[in-house]
Length: 424
Figure 1 (cartoon, rainbow, N blue to C red):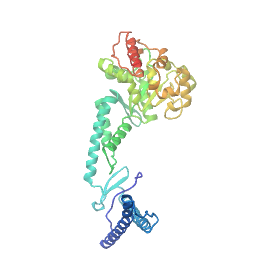
Figure 2 (cartoon, rainbow, N blue to C red):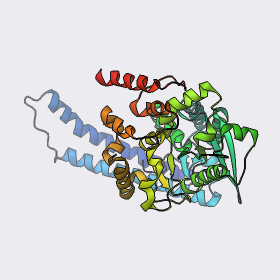
Figure 3 (spheres, rainbow, N blue to C red):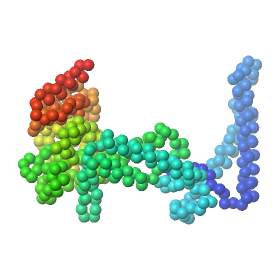
Figure 4 (cartoon, rainbow, N blue to C red):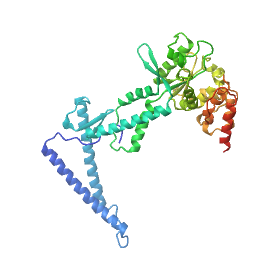
């Protein structure tokens, strides 16, 4: 059924006699159609069952012609009824402004401007309740397993942005409140598979978050960390504060996203378990992000891009490879190229290849790239702590190792594990 198509039956407002006449006409047409079908199908079935001695079926004979005429009349009447129903509904919608309806109209709930006709209210309520229950259960799983531990919640006001740091519990409550208010489209042909697809599409469209890829500030006061945020030790004039606010503003203003993740403030590095989960999950978090905002702090115009040290850092390699969509921004938070996704921009892709040797084909599907080729990309990357060379490559090589800062041999463990996988 085409979008917006109305279906079902509405009780006629004509008098009882007109209703009886139409019912009589319908019964007569049904009898004609059934008789024509019988005259056409019975000989056809007999021809199939007992082919010997039977006359070949004449598809242009009187039986076929009668069937075609009966079908034409039946379809014409049916189409007329549908048009009558649609016209009736349009009048009701105009007269009552799509809201208050009389009980006698027998019009079901309206969802996204589409009226479901002859739908018992209890049926819709039951369907709606089941979908919402499934939706909230799936949302809980999604937030717990596929979204970052903490996110920045961006709430735009007339003259400022209100930014809050929220954990998974608050993220769930925030998203659940949004989804509870969503209209659920009713599907009279609903099935478990279709319901699951509907729920998945709602989850996907309403759980998007932006993620930042950047080079950390050096020196003091530096970045806004989780510890500083909790203490309220925020200097609005500091470079770290301006970066955080600019990132949130860009997420909302350019991409319409009000959830954001920034490694400096969203990870509690004093918690070993949280740090472990964050580092292990980081590649997946970048991969699942609605948009990855790449901030080039040393770049003013697109011609400066390839000289930015962002391209030389260890962690930024996975932040380039993992996202499905990314946008490059200059030091002034200006987009360096047009379009919603620089992963599809030929100019940006050319710069990436010139700077990193990573081609478009490799960027689109890293999973088929040989282990040796991935090692080439990582060979000349730099990190502040030597263990990070291993940790920053876990997602790229699809391996998992325990996080324990303080030993250079970590890198050897990571590469040996990957070699075993590659040779298996």
